[in-house]
Length: 267
Image (cartoon, rainbow, N blue to C red; front, side, top):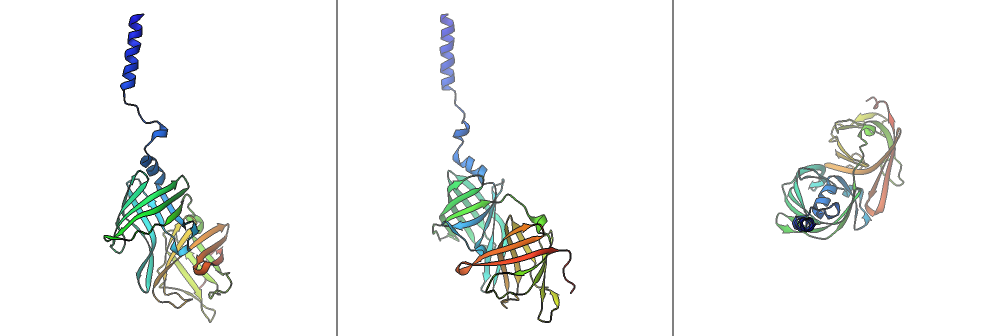
């Protein structure tokens, strides 16, 4: 009996001295955050206010610790363009995401983003450090981002016919847009002589991020502005109907409504 008690005592001591593994509740916070971060995120708010739609940006955190960042870039006074750029790497330390890399203009970035909250659908963070080409531009802003989980590309591809339905808008004519699966598109406009033309200098490239649609184009016909430009829209599709909405300056909301058709116009 004494030998049995002695063996039990030894076993208890051994178990006590063995290193204990982490339970699910004790997973290091950076490992949990890293796991939740993986995927695409689209910005929806800044300091809890809805952003202007053209100020949208998209982030994708990839499993190889590469980050893709997409936003509109001001190339010069007359040209701006939406671009995706994967020249960034990221790491997570406790509740801070560190990002390093170069943007499309060659500027060197070091960012530190402090996670406020993160779950399967929402990411909230604030800028705790913004260093661009060695200069500190830190100005804390709290951002809210929504996870991208759906792909509407198959519904989006095709030919759409419609017009702006907002009041007090200069664009009052009908248009055709022809979207292709490779991310290019054709745009058709109606001139003052009721004749259809295909615009040949529209820089026809578009991007979809769930319900965010971004279109690059050039030489805007409505405003007469010359140069490269882009527009961001929130969109919804129900059957053969599509609606675009964009929050613009002075809290003005612009809306386009269109219907899916079989063919573009004869030009």
